Image (spheres, rainbow, N blue to C red):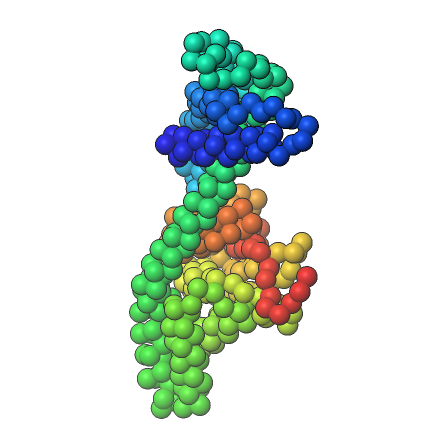
Length: 376
């Protein structure tokens, strides 16, 4: 309310000065009402605007938010005004119009009463303002305040999202060495290297090269907020090459990245948790192993990423129905969901489902497509 009061006074002062200047500079109005006249008139309009219209709008919006079961999540995603249900928005519009009509009439009658007082007769011209002008000024002031508050809310929401993104990035830098650089995977790889040095030196060298590439890309990704999709697929290729040496014929993997999407900018380390999760909780638990497919495509101007693997990724929750997305309880899926929601809001989509008939799990990510150097 203090911010609304200050903004209200600024608008009243600017409005009074504008009306007075227009009257003075117009050759058609040799007799002016005076600056004091407009200040008193607009003060009456602003007073009832704050007392009636502003409070009624706040009450309707507050009531609407209290009726929403997911109010906090919706507010963090959409902000104060855009997050309201359509029904409440119509109620807000209807209430605002009624309050403007009532407030304008009360402001008109109050100003006439002031003019009729001893002070008003001594200092104010006895020209009564037209109700249409009172209503117009009240509507104009209300619209100006609403536009100002709307953009203030959008700016606050953007700042909150930026702070959350920075927080998630900072947390990711710590979690990367715990999750992406999985000690279990690293120790097993080093153990395999030790065994391969004597039996298959060439294979050991290949495994070591892939491990070096994986570690380098992972550490680089921990310091970057986003990079090219080609870098994400390179990291996946190094990791899958290591796992291929460890799992042998039990692992069959495919990476499908169209050349035109290699430069698409994506959050760093976006796919790696999904791939590790698919290997650790889907494929490794199957004696016969299975397949893992990672693909990228463009659909309706969005970047679509898919990770398909044999088995159920049970650590992050799995759907019992092939058309039912899982809720997810593991760090990997929660991390990706929160990161996409923070960075892109409703422009992103996350879905995971298990096909019982084919015993496969598919994770699909949709996010805005931006390719460096490409113009739409």
